[in-house]
Image 1: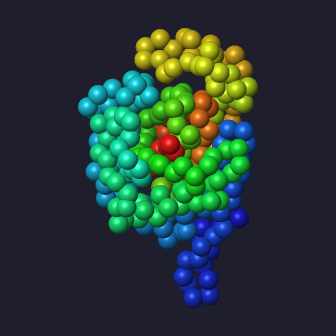
Image 2 (image 1 turned 30 degrees about the vertical axis):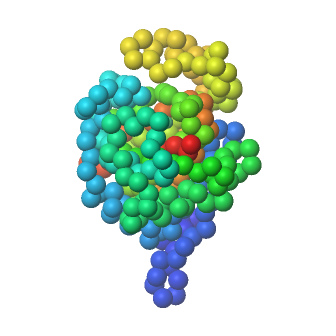
Length: 244
Ligand SMILES: [Fe+2]
């Protein structure tokens, strides 16, 4: 069932209803933006300036084996962030389509009891990322925030192109939120992390489906699989960030 292509009698693109699903670790919102806004955001995305991650300093979430994804500007709602990590920060309102994206993130629909309280304390940091073939983001958790999100901006993605989001099993995540079990991102020696993740050794995957938003609870181990050669010259284009 494809709602994205929905048009009314006048040939105009119509707003399609969101589909929200969630489990203990993630909330998935398909058809997150109206189709027209998704396209405008895709056009906007392509006009931004990007640089390779780790070109200025090593952001250790991106490991050496992850290759060099590209990072664009960061859009911010709220006062300056506690750590900016050398980001190009642009503050809301921006008078661009990014404002609609940030407005949608504050939607009451995302305010699921026991999951995320968007409306009450809404500060957000969202960064544009583009992953060419061969790039990835290894296992990590974004424990210091109230939730992390990923939105897929590209207009099409093939099922064999890679770039899936992997989320470790609930058993692991329950343990991960216990600080005595927490494992930080290893820069060189990943044996402790491997032992932790291999103990249960299971989880779920989510495809980088266009116009999909995924919200991840804090403390949940997740990663982005490498974009496969099958993707050719197509980049996995996302906006990702955090609720504070
Ligand atoms: Fe993350």
